[in-house]
Length: 332
Ligand code: 5MM
Image (cartoon, rainbow, N blue to C red; front, side, top):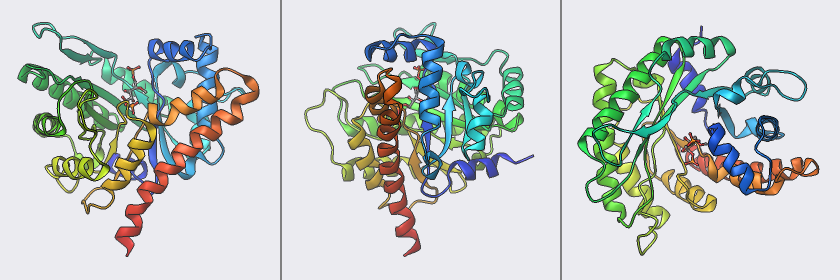
């Protein structure tokens, strides 16, 4: 059996990132409808097959995160998704949280759920071929948020999830996301992200999670979407890397979420990060910044599957190229 550190190293292969195609049924249905596509299970399946089968995707993508529905579906030729993507040289992953729900006791804040029965679900996903998993905790910057209670509760849940994954031989992607919503500047985002990462690290340590066998999926440190001046890629990179330096050298790697940034901005920020020397690789695990252009280009038209794939590949290649800038820096 391949160990978690070995799988994590494959996920962080030089020049590659991870595609987040794990929208829940509700989110995916909403996005299909926004693009004029009927939100049926079959249309969700066709769309995910469009993404996963884009020619040459594995040149820049090491893994794809799916949701439960997709993992149980098949390609048009009848091959189950996990086996089909494995045959294409891509690791299949599974989102195992069941969503961020209102947290009792914490007005307006959420706790991500999904721990009940998790070991059993992980065993089933492993048998289906899943190599890694994902769990996302969500934090909102407000006048009094995120509270210490929300940070501690979500950090603990992330650690329990991560420990359960490693016990099942599945690499956990640990995703603490500070949303971009708000009028705060990037310094506030840095401070909040720092506090959350410290809590997550402490909880991971208490449950003996091996950092060499996890992939951290954080937000970039950016200003809120209602702040007056957008930060430059260099400013984003400097603060983001400063926060990440609090993680030990043996962390397998960092794969950023895009968080609603324009695709070009997310890529430029990722590229700027590569100028910083770090003990772990920095890559992408974008959702919207990769799949939104593909969804708009396809918009449910069977004749436009190729156009959807081309839109995906354009963005995937751009991010792969951004990540390879670092490889060039390291080699020289
Ligand atoms: C693809 O969206 C993921 C699942 O979202 P829902 O459970 O809300 O439907 C999401 O967790 C995603 O993997 C991360 O937020 C990263 O995606 P972005 O678009 O922020 O890069």
